[in-house]
Length: 178
Image (cartoon, rainbow, N blue to C red; front, side, top):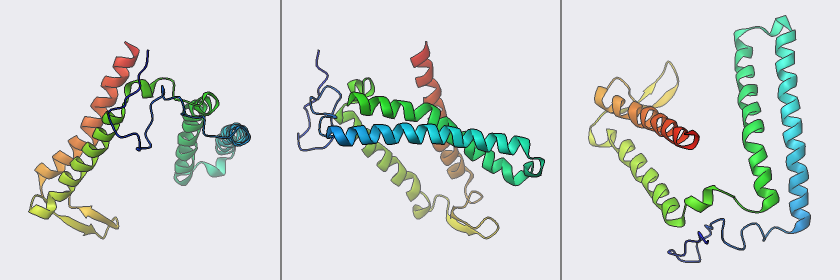
């Protein structure tokens, strides 16, 4: 069964997992180097973050608000190392993406990219046409849309950047694990 999608020009550098040449263009010595480097980075990243946790836990002088951010960064980095890196290594070893590219076709990928840019441009253009406004907040040193200028624009931003993505993530995770 072939999942190859040939509806777009073959000159586009977007390939499906079923394409024969995905991963084959990496020479074996380079592939071996990247695998060794990846394993080294995964191990050193994991051990480094564990060392940060132990240090923050054992040293009472580091139990301050400032180091909460350091701990948060270490947690985020640890999650990336534990979750993402093994899949990257798996992909590098096999030479293809075993699942996602069977469902995400070239047309779907390009459609999603166009949709992201169109929606982003439309939302960002609101203040340019009088719906909300851009401004500078001297207190936070932030230049962006003024959250107090238009409640409806702020609600759109909140729903569009938090509500819709959170709902989509919940739905897709539910779909995966049901």
